[in-house]
Image 1 (cartoon, helix red, strand yellow):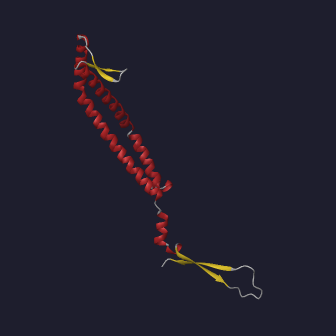
Image 2 (cartoon, helix red, strand yellow; image 1 turned 60 degrees about the horizontal axis):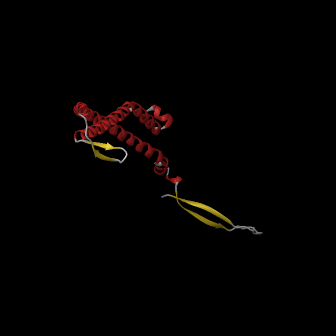
Image 3 (spheres, one colour; image 1 turned 180 degrees about the vertical axis):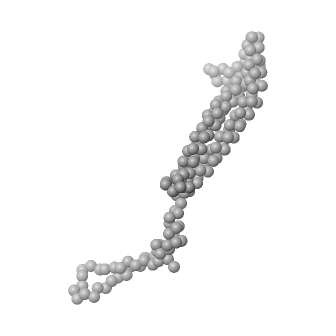
Length: 167
């Protein structure tokens, strides 16, 4: 609490937000790593599935064409497909676990950002003055013409500005 008096409560929340970001940095890295592995594995499984169907992706025409594979290519594709297929649930669980952790971290960061934004934009001092020192605010301003009682009247007019305090 004493550290909040130095820079204010918003500074203390900002420091907590930055420390939370540093504490969850490894989660963000693991999430990015697991998402890359997950999507590469999905891509590889789709490509190997097309191998079983006798199809392949034609890069030049941007479409799937028929193709006859050798027995060695089919055997290697079967082995790689079975390894990737049985590892897929593990990769999927890691991906979803780190995705949930990362989304939870982002939600907490969003709450911190909203609270900091409210604290920095809300007029706390004006409310404090309004409730504890209402005479600092006025409900209106009146302009009165002053009639000078001088023997030689000046060439200019004089006005008095008087404010009306809040009731």
